[in-house]
Length: 418
Image 1: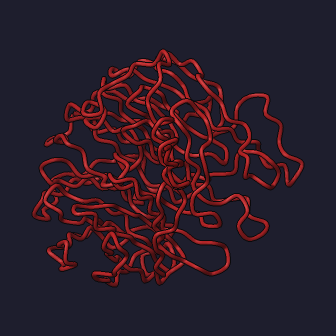
Image 2 (image 1 turned 180 degrees about the horizontal axis):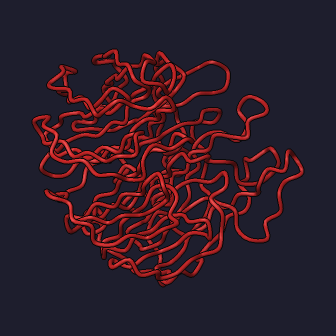
């Protein structure tokens, strides 16, 4: 007698099959080697912002490259990837241009590098006309192999309704898992409730699998067990942290206090940390909160200075960087220390944050500088990374596999330090 599997198990089994990496001509890497790099914004699917290696103790400038915009990624071989005004580019570990794929970031987002060597990204490809609706660009999801060749392209998602297309990411970062499954958060355009927002899952082959958390948009993190967390909003005044299984079943949702979302991190023992605020300025109130994997709130801490960037050290200490400085918190929410990071300009934005294996924090602030802070809260050094930006940009950071630090400055200059 043949026994049939329940529908939700069939869906999970199909997802597992589609998650098996396929040969693509890319430079595949073991997952352990991949994790030693900086393959996505936030470093890993849990968005810990933590490198398994050490950053530079005393930074020495190795090389620069002018024209990079937005966060840079570092591959296992030291190659650097990112957006420029000419398209998606790859640089060698010595700063030599390897290739450029003509495209525009437009309303897309940062790239993410999988263990299979494919660089996945959302952006506008050449020849894609603007949509008639307010001349909005047509966005595609596509993957590029290590040689600069486009491997697959998605130009329309089945659930996109305004019109049938790939929705906008608007800079919200995607995630690639160790199984080469892509999670892409979308934030619109949402002309009506539930339209073009949520998280799209894409198989290693480039096949859209399903939409999660329909109607919400915002930053995401993926737990090792597969639970997807989103710090989201639905354009109807609801601001929440949501948890869902990969088959789309909503596990729980909890409200957060403010409308401007910051970071979501899955930490040790599955604890989920989130940050949000009432605005982006140094005087705006906010919060950092912790939840169990089952959705029970553990603690909530008031902050001030816009949404905090969060990272987790290897010992479980949470680092929160906002417009008023860098704060270290115990897993139970107790303040351990605080260090000021200078006076932010009027157009302050949330800092960027990375932490190395030794617990040192690297913070890119809205004054256009990067600071290193020792594990005990002592300021170690400061670098100039382009100065204050009128547009409110902050330097973005990535820690490489050989004690390197990549800084994309407010002046669109990439600086690599060792």
